[in-house]
Image (cartoon, rainbow, N blue to C red; front, side, top):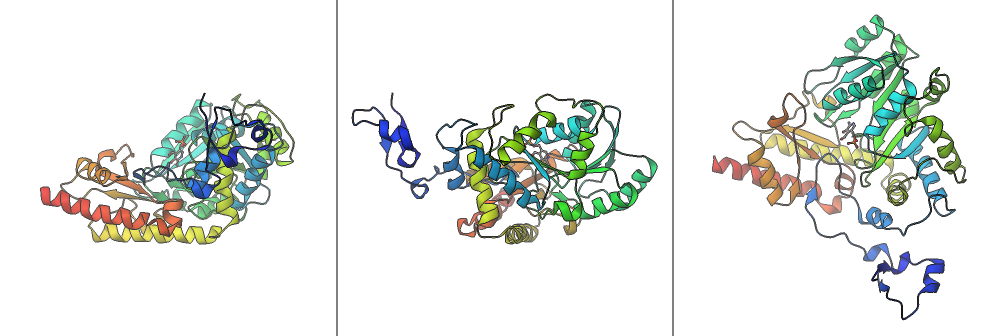
Amino acid sequence: MSLLLSVSQLRGPLLSQLRPSSSIIVRKMSSIEQFKQSPHKLLVIPGPIEVSDEVLFANAHPSVSHVSPDFIPVLGDCIRMMRTVVDTAEGQPFLIAGSGTLGWDQIAANLVEPGENALVLHSGYFGDSFAECLETYGANVDQLKAEIGSAVSQEAIAEALNKKKYKLLTFTHVDTSTAVLSDAKSIVETVRRISPDTLVALDGVCSVASEEIHMDQWDVDVIISASQKGLGTPPGLSILVASKRAMQAFSSRKSRPTSYYGSWKKWLPIMKAYESGKPAYFATPPVNLIYAFHASLSKITKSAPSLSNRYELHREASRRIKTAAKELGLNQLPLDSAFAANGMTALWYPDGLGAGDIIPRLLKKGIVVAGGLHVDAKDKYFRIGHMGITAVEKSRDDVDTVIKALEETLAEAAAEK
Ligand SMILES: Cc1ncc(COP(=O)(O)O)c(C=O)c1O
């Protein structure tokens, strides 16, 4: 057997067991400084995003028990750091193996009882999916649909809330299919004015850590996210933070949660145990991914740039890409820059050009962007992600690289027509 290990991965007993005759080959890679991910195309889709060497190195942690004293504080720290990211003092985080979709399932299974009403604000593809998930668990769902490129108006929300009592209102903070950024603060204000008990859930899969979020100040009840976008970690972790109001609604439900794996009855004691430094088991956490998540969250919450500077850097990267696109004659999907996301850009193809003219050319230049996703306009636009290190680490030059490739691509495509 031949095993490649870095020196730093050799800890305690394992190190002492190594004999010169051992077939283990020790790769002299004593620290993160010597770890470099292999050259690859620049991934600028709206998630998964580029992940730093530090985070990938943390993911390569040797296997440890999920209930070992080494690991417990790592998950405990992640729980605490998630509170910082969404700016809440007492929100209850749930970090569970799964993708962003599991956040919808958790909300549907724990906060809505079969037959209760839910209102879904639709600003793109992900509204339909959230609605379908809620229906799967027996909720009565109404959707308010905005025209493509815009968000549901406060007037429309107020009218719907005046007509019917809803247990839950959901909205997609940034709909990844349209790059539309909803005005979270105003949505909650409208809900509290008309129907104060209605729970408000923010789908932040494409906004957490790239768009400003103040959970307590805005009075949001649930925020869901995933590891692979603004949170700068490989995919595989469902992240949810629930307010006190949401936890009270959960504990006063009459029927039991309608999911086994996603049940907060199961997960709440686990999250509390890890946060207080004690082992507990319901289902095995993704240990290595949690190490990676810890590395990314430490960077986001505990080192420069500060969280508020991060948001500013996302806004700056976004402005640069959107301005360059405009100069190249590319129009954005969002109808008004007031509701255009800062972590991604969605651009209509120019007249006479389509996906085949743009995406493969960018790919040849080493840039991976995403095609359209909104069911009504799938083939008419493409999307560029600029979250995490692409926006924050200017020395990478990712934004310049994307702009240059876009300029060349459009010139080549136009010349060929
Ligand atoms: C806004 C939004 N919500 C939910 C999801 C679902 O997340 P996942 O694909 O991680 O399950 C996505 C995925 O891109 C998303 O962008």
